[in-house]
Length: 413
Image (tube, rainbow, N blue to C red; front, top):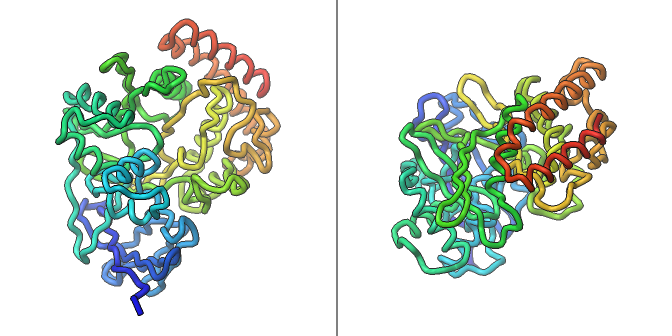
């Protein structure tokens, strides 16, 4: 009879304090769809107390912890897997069927550019490739190659194509890759594609700049108007500090829900639930109020792609788990949405003042009055910041977004 237990896969962590790589635990598939994770005794005995997933994998030295979702892949390891874009590249490169389990993509993707601070391998001792991102002067070639890949055309540059396939671990469904600038900062490059119904990179850059100008913590972006005929936005990665990788966890993992997954699971897709999970893992009240502000901003700008993989927490040495900067905030290029993908309060997806304030106590406000004052002040800041940021848009899009701003402010005020 053939064995049912697969060869173990070891999980490595770049220590938040020293940057040294250590073996944090072992992932092992027992049966199809059944797997466990065990923290390494050497990790626990050394007094290393960083849980890689404080919600789903608390630090326990002798307990095999099962994976209840993703057909036997633990949530935080799912976070380290490629998403739709990376999976498509790896399926083509390795001639894999659509039904390929996520654990296979976890193994096939290179450690050189995974999201967060984890790496995986088949050896007990860590052996992790250094970050190997193209440099910023290669941006033009990189965009050209990404567009060719999205259209399934032959490689423009074979060496670059191989690297992009190997490092296809960053999230999302659109083509993207990482570049490093002269200051040793890492940026996610996201070009427009032929099927876009609007200038998506421009809309993302506009929204990120607008959010930051409103006083919220949004990831820094740089816009490139035309690279090989396509506009491109690059977004500063919050999981990289120079050559150091930072642990991250998605809101999907914090909320113990799958994405993508059954739409019936959306009862767990909730801003107030996420605020509570942030509190449980030690994030500050400031972070929970920041999350409230982002919920409001998403409602005003019409970003209804605010799903549970578009929010995250990041671990910073000396600070612990913190809400990450906002990312992937893109106003809907279609009609003005009247609801978000995440619940604004229990059972409420609609963009309205009542829905926004319904669970305000979960976000750390002292009372209902403080929440209302914060909301009204933020709406004023968002409206004022729009006039500065809208200049980034073409005149037709300025008109579209001004109408959207007025419509959603009238719903919330």
